[in-house]
Length: 150
Ligand code: RB5
Image 1 (spheres, rainbow, N blue to C red):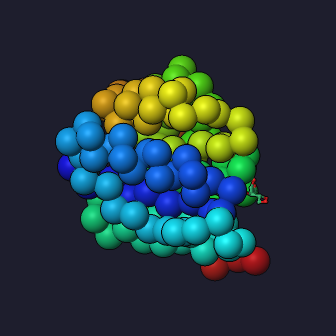
Image 2 (cartoon, rainbow, N blue to C red):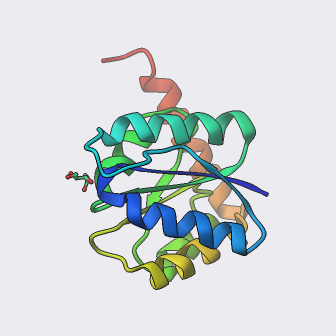
């Protein structure tokens, strides 16, 4: 199972940890950068991971200092539902209720051990559909409604 992983410079140490963790768990992480602590702009990384997620229909993981900027940026891309999760309860409901396809984590907030648990929960939880289906469809409808407007 492939998983796209990306971070800005603030999240790069946690991203290295996450990639090693995913590989040890038998997943196939796709490293979308960044690769050093040289400063980069989180929207650029969000776009690379979002592209992989949409094209390969896989899950993604994004890390920046707070997880906020990189998730906001990813959520501008139609088809992406990026959930900022700094706890396991959010990670589970992000999948069950929101069919999130990216989990975002704040490296300045969440330690590596908790990040592992959040990611494990996110990956292993399925979308519940049912009553949540039409709500997620309404998110897609909003994307379509505002696609051409500025
Ligand atoms: C980078 O300094 C920082 O602004 C970024 O990692 C993130 O926290 C933005 O939301």
